[in-house]
Length: 332
Image (cartoon, rainbow, N blue to C red; front, side, top):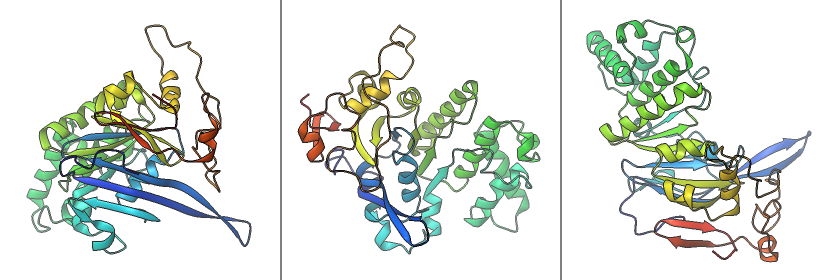
């Protein structure tokens, strides 16, 4: 499946027909196949933010882990800077790839080791990737303090000596961002980096990510279930359901003129201060079947506009306008 035009100028990242099947053991001898990701394709340009949105279990985090080489895909290609990394690299990602593609995890509490100082978490990647010589403690300290200041943790000397339990959730997430920045990445996979933070702290972290994009030209794959933050941060937004990318468009366009019934359902659940908060949800509740899924569109069982064709075959990708596509049988 192609979700955006092949003519897009030389993207930094190109994901092509990516699929992932997990084998889950049931009982002592039986296993079942869970289709977590199916025929997913998209591009990320230089200094571009692409958001992946959808409900829990839609495949967003699996996508990020595949790109980061934390998981191996069942099918498809991951092309980074023109190189198919699944063919040219070993089963485990090379150190050079790790320095170019970093990941920020959702949990700022679990992603830092409580027995080490905040400075230690930033020193490790600097030394591991040779950004600072091991025999130069002054340069190492200066690099750590500079990174802490870059992410807004000042006075840096004070924060460097703290332990994770002495920092707030927002401060810990900024340390995780500093750790990712330490190796000079070109692409950061941000897996719901604000979901475990207080609402008052989220905008600060998002503004920091925007500043990093603009100042350093870093690209982001931003994973979230929060459509409002996707509109605020992302240049383009892709909607995922049951492992499929069902719609994609520039973020402002997607939020104001959604086409897929699932996208409309997601947006109808977003509180609107102008009065539509009480509008009825246009769709049924439920979860998709990922083990031995039925033919057709995975959203068919919940769609209020379902037709016979929806239950019989997976809809093709249709272009609705400049960089706006949808995977749906309905006429638009």
